Length: 223
Length: 205
Image 1: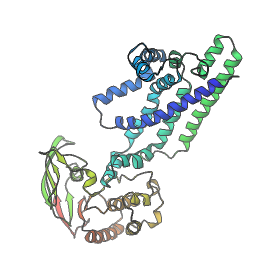
Image 2: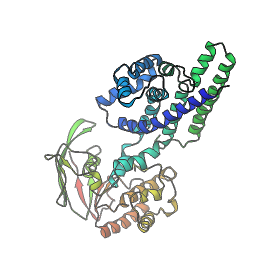
Image 3: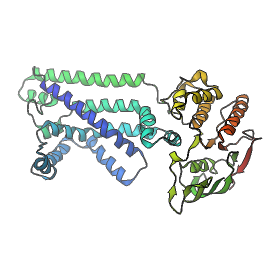
Image 4: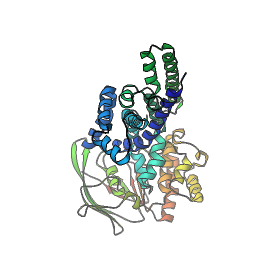
């Protein structure tokens, strides 16, 4: 059995999760503040991957990443970077596709913290950054873990967007979900079953871990 | 003197109303702020702290401008050096009692002094959810004092304490205020809070 697709899937999920943690937490914090029209529009856009068929998102990303059009052309000409049918392209597409899984729970957690927590910190002379690091972030830890695990699991299970953007290049873009599809297409049910079982087992273990963690976690002190 | 002359539009149960306050508070003294529920006592404290911005007016602290509506100037909350005891305590769920005080002060002796003052020495490693209501309230007071504020704003800060503890704590706090020269504004519904040692400011319609 070729483990390359499993390895690629795990690598893609890990890189996507780490990048989304770095981007998603500040964005979620910003979105949890006073509501403005710009924030509402941005949040609606971030939520789109939840409701859009992956093929729609994949199609638009394919157009955007294409070396013949705007953004893709610019990347190709200036940075010699081609996102279509490349692992880098998969990472970028996964980040966009999994954005709501990271941002929604974290934003909701920030929104549920009493405003007086930050206010108390400010009156103690602490800056917004210190307040964020020492007071706000530690008190939404459970939601950050959940969001990270959901993002990881969701990226692991991507199919439509990955197929549209990455195609099926062994060792580059052929992740486990594509390998299953490929195996079924060639009537290799044995290989399909192996990939499917491994994906099922990993995803189940992750989801189970979230449930166990949430059960053990201290109940939200503000509830 | 703390000179307050502000107007702030606030939402009350009767709808939107203007909170107009024009008064002076004496430096180095304790002033009790009383008035009916919903009249804007907490809002006034938050305006003085810089947590809420009034529409118009000025706030001066000992000659230093903290707020000037005309010049659109508001001194940063962090630079006002106030201590605030919130009505809901606003304790940090991730921090132990001792960590709350260490967040405001690096002086270990002073932290110990505060824990002793609030009779919290035995609870230094407790998280807020492991403390009783009275202990949480005392911790909120001690935390506000940890930065040695020039102005302490207390919003119903003794409501969860029994009478004996309240009297004892107020005596100790009064001594500390004298030593540190702290100016104190206390919002309260209870006459016994710093009754004999304070001035009274009554917010009316």
